Structure formats: C-alpha cells, structure tokens
Length: 595
Image 1 (cartoon, rainbow, N blue to C red):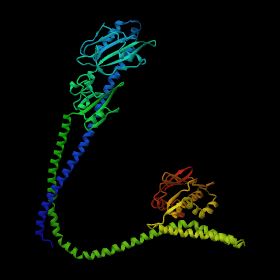
Image 2 (tube, helix red, strand yellow; image 1 turned 90 degrees about the vertical axis):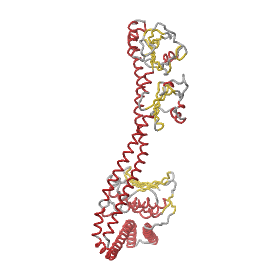
Image 3 (cartoon, rainbow, N blue to C red; image 1 turned 180 degrees about the vertical axis):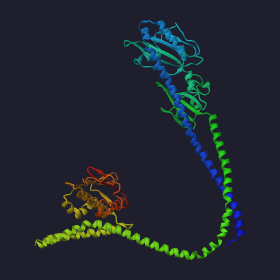
C-alpha cells in the first residue's frame, strides 16, 4: 500500500520539478522561436526589399521612358503643324511660328532651345533660354550647323521618325559649359512634298528628370553610364564624374558587384540583399540606375525586428509562468486519486499474472487462426491462378483425346496420328506441370532467372494455344527484327504474353470481330526493350481501363477470376523490374511492356 504522507512529500517535490520543467521547456521553446525568427527575418527582409525596390524602380523606369515618349510625340506634332510646314516651304506665317515656338518654350520650362535648321545646315529659327527659370527669347545669331553630328544623324532618319541624341553635358565652343547643364537633343526631319527641307530640333534640360528619378527616402539612387562613370551620385560633387572627378563605380562597390551592374541584362534584378540595378536605355545609350537601401532604412528595419523579438520574449516568459502554475495545481488532486485507488491497484496486481496468461492464450489462438486464414487465402489465389492457366491446356488435351476416339471409331487411327496426339498431350501435360512449378516458384523469394529470347517465349505459348487461335481465325503477327533477349524467368514471361493473347481472344468473341488480329512488336530503345501487344477488339471502356490491373477485377462475370492481368503486372513490375501500361489505340487495346 502507498502511504499518504509519502505521497504528499512526493507531490510537493514533483510539483516543484514540474514547475521548473515547464519554465525550462518554455525558455528552450522561446530560444528556438527567436533563432528561427532571426533566421527567417533575413529571408523576409530580402523578399520585402525585392518587392518594394522592384515596384519603385519600375515606376522610375516608366517615368524615364514616358518623358522621352512625350517629347517625341510633341516634336512630331509641331512638325505636322500646317502653318509650320508653310513656314518651312516659303517662309510665310513667320510671326505665327515665332509665337508658336515662344508659347511652347513658356509651357515647357525644361526646353533649353527650339530650332529649325534648313537642309543646308543653317539655322533659320532659334529660341532659347539660359537657365530653366529664365524667360525664353528669339536670337538672331544664327549659325551653320551642317557639320554637327546631330544635324547629320537627324537628317538620315525616315520621315515621321524621332532621333534622340545621347544625354550629355552641354558643350559651347568646344568646352563643357560651366556650371554643368545636362541636355538631350530631340529631332525629326522635315519633308515637304517628300523632299527633305531640314530638321526641327529641341534641346531639353535633363537635370529635373534625373533629380526626380533619383529622389527617394528609402534608397540611395545612383545613375552610371556604360563605362562606369557616375551621371548622378548621392553626393552631388560626383555628378557627371567623367568630366569632373573621374569617380567610378568601383570606388563605392566591390568588383563583383560592379561587374554585375555593367552586365548586358535588360531587366531589373537584385544583386545582393540591399542593392538593385535597373537598366535604362535611350536609343543606343545605356544607363544603370542603382538603388541601395539607405543606412537609415536598414536601421529602422533592424530596430523593428529587435522590438518584435523582445516583445515575443517578454510575452512568452510571463505566459510560461502562468501556464506552469495552472498545470501544476491539478497534481494535488491527482495524488489524492492515486491514494484512493491504491487498494484496487494492489488487487489488480495480484490477479494480473492470471489475466495476462488468459489473454496471451486468447491472442495466440487468434494469431494461429489468422495465419491459417492467410495461408488459405494464399492457397486460394494459387489454385485460382492455376485454374486460369490450366483452362486452355485442359481444353486442348480434351480435344486431342476426343479426336483419338473419333479416329479410332472410324478405323482411321494409325501410328503417326497416334504418336502426334501422344506428343501433343505430353506437351500439354508438361506445360501444366511447368505452370504448377511457376506458381510454386512465384511465391518463393528466389527463382531461377536467365537471359532468354522473347521469340522463344512466344513460340512456347503458341504451341499450346496456336490451334485455338487458328480455329477462331485470329491472325497473329510478331515483329522482332533484333531478335531481342531479356533477363528473367522465361515461364513467368510466357504467362504474361499468354494472358494478353487470351484476353484479346475473349474480347474478339465478346464483340464478334470479323477479322480479328493481334500484333506483337518488339523494339530495343536505348537500354530498354519495348514489347507491345495490340488488338482490334474495340478497346477497353474508359470507365474501367484504370482498374483492369486490380486483383479480382473482371468483366467476364462467372467465367473470369480477375487474376490474370493482376498477376501479369506483378510478374513484370515486381519480378522483372519493368513496367506495363495499357491504352486504347487504333480501334483496340494496346498493352506495352518495358523491360
């Protein structure tokens, strides 16, 4: 009997240990969750960075592309203006065109110059402003621009096309203008009656566009040219570094990052967990917009992550104490129940051996019964399979005996006929005997296997069911150009072929096929042998084609056992390590075996 006093002491000790166990387990759980959270947070930060930076870079690329699309549309609209065409043709409407150019310059503060240059390269009309904030004005100091690259390039493009110059700093008198003015030239050729008359060209300040697409509170945004020099830098003193400081990408980024930035990729991509590059292009000019997460943004994410970890730790710690107290309290009641049940446990212990012996005998009896049932089921399967395989040899043997009797009654029985019938009968009996051996071996782990010719297996079953096929006018063709061999048990493989041929014969009978035909094709494909058996019996209904290899599934009612195809699949896939499949093709069923 268990003493109550002793149980009480044990209860107190156990309660304390349980409380400590809960605390320890919870702390370990918290530590694990924290480590996992830290690990996953890095991955989450990367996905968050990729998601947000992709959206922002796409918007900035759209802004960049839209800027030039709108300027191209604008210059084409001017070129198609009826009054401008008359001005180009004969100089008329010059006051109206002056007003048009002045209005456009007023409406578009980023326009630095608007000019019409005739077919000889001479400026005929020129409006300009010194800075974006200045008022535009018409200048009478017109120059010969026939040797300038922009006149030559714009003159060569098709009517209705727009030419963009490379974005660069404005150059006056062969020198870069100070302070720097980044500009791009947009031009289109002017044709009157399909005759080239000059070009319309607009010089556009690019400072505002670059400032707009590099403005961000989350990222430091750089723009570099194809040579690695900066066009825009977070530190303005490095802007247009090709002409000023010669400051390059490799001053800010590692060599492998620089290589990736200057690769030929045409879409935006993440280079590391805080660097993203977005290619920008204008004609043949290529820029790279590089977005780098700012230190401030990274610090904010890190601080938020740390706050979350601390909150989880504090919450989990207090919850662990609460749950430890809650789960420890029921122990007192548990031990009281233990004391009240002590006597019952003592009685149960004294009688336990007897009950165990009785239950052991019952379980042993059940085990023997289950073993016998299992053996009977296995024996039933074997007998059913043997019956399925013996049906046709027995029929053939019966017919042979009946023929002997008939010839004897008619007095036509001679030695040759008798010997032929005896040989046929002995062959049937030997095949039946081999069938029994095959089934006996099938249920053993080891079987005799060797390499054999497929055609030999086919001819061995044709000797048995050949006359039956001829009687049914079933034409059977076999194509084995390579005289293929496979490794396995020849008799088992013969059973598979026989099952497929006999099933096709039954389908011919059931569907009353006029010209029944079975084609067997044997091919060698790479390291595999493919054996296909095709009939023209109408095929297998779609609703059962996936079930025909199931055990005991049959469509022959009382004539079938549902064992043949199941056994065939077991032989091919389990014993020969191959594959068998079925499909409907060419008005019949096609069984394909891969060994």
